[in-house]
Length: 171
Ligand SMILES: O=P(O)(O)OC[C@H]1O[C@H](OP(=O)(O)OP(=O)(O)O)[C@H](O)[C@@H]1O
Ligand SMILES: Nc1ncnc2[nH]cnc12
Image (tube, rainbow, N blue to C red; front, side):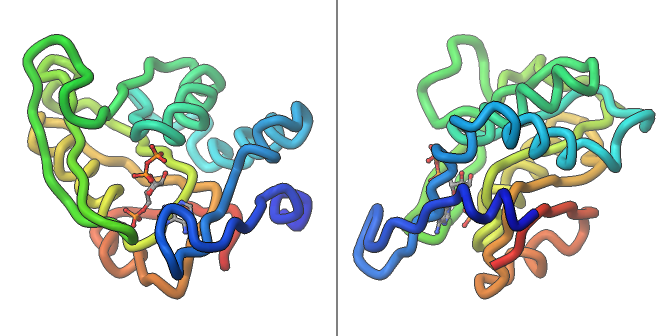
């Protein structure tokens, strides 16, 4: 996983002063590492009963849709407000650098669906926790949350305590 770390770039003071932003664009531009990264993300869930992968806009779309493809299941986009065209359910939450909201189509998940949640970064856990609650509010079951990296000093794991977590890299 050191190879992955080497391709994640620190950008200081983005998007606001004091934040060290973990930029995954060098990683996703590397075709071999991108494949290795997605393979490692989905490894614990191969052969498990997963109905769909859900990913959060925007970076969760990159890893989530590739993971869905590899697992042979569909992808559910959890989007920023006002982007989904049909009827939505919404959830509001806080993150490391502000507050935000996500929406899902009301027919994206059926009762009993088993959902794997995928994103690039687990920071405060606000985004992932809200995503899990949105999925549950629509009747789905969250099987686990998988992330490329975890910012351990922000204790997102505690916020996500009710859910199994899989991360590839920790800072
Ligand atoms: O654990 P948290 O503190 O909630 O932070 C993690 C979230 O923050 C980033 O998304 P962001 O909202 O910046 O959106 P983006 O993917 O569109 O850049 C990241 O992609 C995660 O979704
Ligand atoms: N420090 C960080 N770098 C990249 N994405 C983030 N999402 C929340 N905090 C982040």
